[in-house]
Length: 234
Ligand code: HEC
Ligand code: HEC
Ligand code: HEC
Ligand code: HEC
Image (cartoon, rainbow, N blue to C red; front, side, top):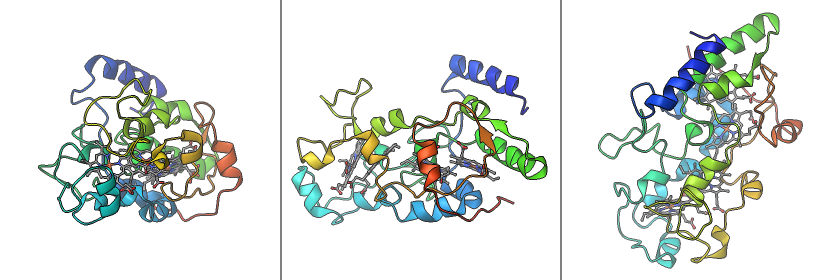
């Protein structure tokens, strides 16, 4: 099952049956954080981790009023809001309003890294192989299993989803927080992706995964990364 060809085949089948039960599944922040303890801890203090809080009444009242929203209204079950403030809204395994999971109720790991049901098993196996014999695994196997290494399109889907943003995928419901409301809501990927208000800090990797696709700032981030704490999911 973990042979790269199997993943290539699975990816091809996904292209045909996308949206079916074969699709990658969202699993929530707890699974990822059990192995990636430091990123999990750091993420918890980011704006993304608190995105659901912002939909509660009286929270961020001034920002809501400025965007012509009702500061006293509870937006936590509003389908015009929830989609961009949670993980994988109405996608396979993702957050739903009817059955809200607390491990999906924020902009979590999989909102940026991709739904993890397929690639997380490769992380475990590759990590064990590396520990045993320094054997490396190509990143391509992760990409084939649905892990995202470019990020920008995922960010755009929430940050540039409004009329006139220039992003081709824009469709309702739009974000109420646009540059028209306040210039500070202008999304600039290269700047925002370094903003520790919303992005977790970076920790040194052992080098288990190698080759393309590699994120454009990967080497840059790793050169200043901290030494973190790992865990396991057993
Ligand atoms: C699922 C939707 C979603 C995705 C994907 C997403 N964001 Fe966000 N982002 C939000 C929401 C919602 C907030 C506001 C959180 C809050 O304060 O409630 C936010 C806030 C931010 C902020 C803080 C802005 C400020 O000045 O207060 C930054 C920076 C940011 N995001 C960067 C990014 C980057 C970079 C990516 C892609 C790597 C990304 N985001 C992906 C929804 C998303
Ligand atoms: C298309 C995605 C999207 C939708 C739909 C959406 N939001 Fe957001 N929301 C965002 C993003 C992205 C940000 C972060 C903007 C930034 O700071 O640059 C955000 C930020 C916020 C903030 C924090 C603003 C601040 O200045 O701190 C609040 C409050 C909020 N949203 C409430 C809502 C409410 C209420 C709704 C529904 C009426 C809603 N959002 C619908 C994407 C969305
Ligand atoms: C808003 C987007 C976003 C969210 C949410 C997010 N990450 Fe990341 N993550 C990134 C980016 C961008 C990188 C840099 C990728 C690189 O350097 O290759 C990264 C890197 C990483 C790395 C590589 C090592 C490092 O520290 O740079 C790990 C591991 C990781 N993230 C785990 C997680 C986990 C676990 C969560 C959830 C608790 C999470 N991420 C949430 C965007 C995100
Ligand atoms: C069983 C433990 C385990 C789980 C669960 C797990 N990972 Fe990993 N992950 C690893 C190991 C081991 C590595 C290789 C780390 C290294 O090289 O230092 C890794 C590497 C990564 C990287 C770096 C990839 C690169 O470019 O080199 C990212 C990003 C990441 N994981 C995110 C996640 C996310 C998001 C989830 C949840 C969907 C997750 N991981 C679940 C163990 C795990």
